[in-house]
Length: 82
Image (cartoon, rainbow, N blue to C red; front, side, top):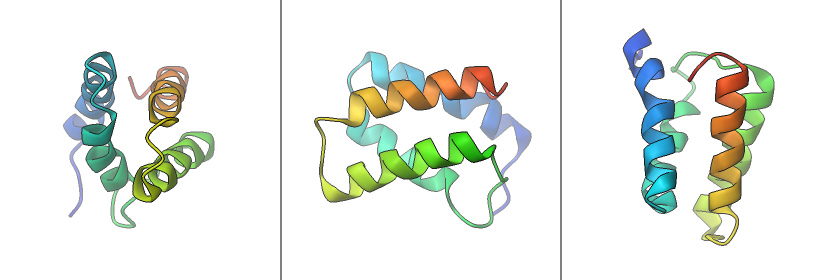
């Protein structure tokens, strides 16, 4: 289940597009995948933001998803993944 580099070049723009469409629940599927143990390890701060989003998504806390997703995208830009 190793992901190609192209996946990581496309996933964060996709998440940004889903954020713009307010499809934060749909984005959860992709964020969840990024945390799979066999995927590429991401920087610790980005990983923590992904975990926070996933926890909110799994628990059904949809009110915070938009802000959390925005934070993920911002961190991905800073760390060079966007």
